[in-house]
View 1 (cartoon, helix red, strand yellow):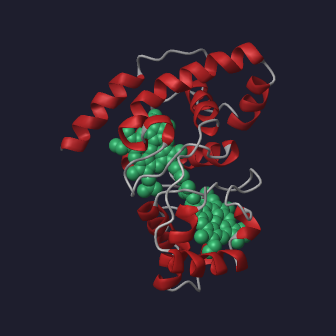
View 2: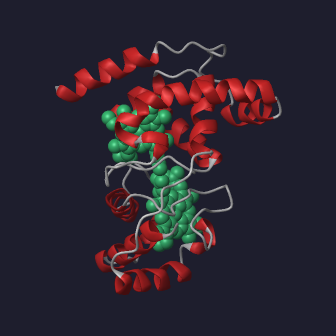
Length: 212
Ligand code: HEC
Ligand code: HEC
């Protein structure tokens, strides 16, 4: 019940932000491209995004650097990936009741603002703790994961940035993909995680979390 009250309070907060675009079927990719070509509009929507982010900060942290190991950083995330996740929450391909409610309450320019704001924030590097485990994880990463997420874990823009991501979140997502969970189903990630053991996941997570 507490979470429902929190959702209501946060959604009430979102309604404060009013912007121009309202239609739900706006093509976010095309809109982002257009916004980026217009400096004044871009700056204005960045500010909208920064305001909306005050609501998101309750969970995703200031500037998108989460302080909860189970909640993802949004800082430094690739725009194309953010847009795809917003779409997936909206149309139910990715299911998380709370996030779906948040995203459905935002209009398209608030979404573009969020993408502009978070993608330009810096990820706070985490100290590398267990060096033996990290080395083991790097070996695995360099065999499989780099092909889509790049050697530096930031991907070329098409896929998710995973460098510096929160450990429990990484581990949860890898297990969901491995299980072929319909909550986040993705054929590329299902194939990439199918053969991972729990020990492989633990090592890869230690490594990925430590990438600056
Ligand atoms: C009450 C906590 C909470 C709040 C507030 C919240 N989120 Fe989330 N968010 C989560 C959790 C938990 C997840 C992981 C969901 C899952 O299980 O897949 C998530 C996932 C996401 C993701 C996917 C990230 C990734 O790496 O795949 C995006 C994007 C996102 N949230 C954006 C937002 C935005 C934008 C706001 C503010 C408008 C917001 N969230 C507010 C808890 C929250
Ligand atoms: C063939 C390409 C490909 C390979 C190889 C690959 N991934 Fe992915 N990864 C993706 C795609 C595509 C997504 C986005 C899926 C989605 O939208 O849910 C993704 C998403 C993720 C996410 C979720 C990110 C987030 O913020 O929600 C994590 C974590 C991840 N991959 C880790 C890995 C790891 C670790 C490996 C190596 C074991 C790996 N990936 C190998 C394509 C790949």
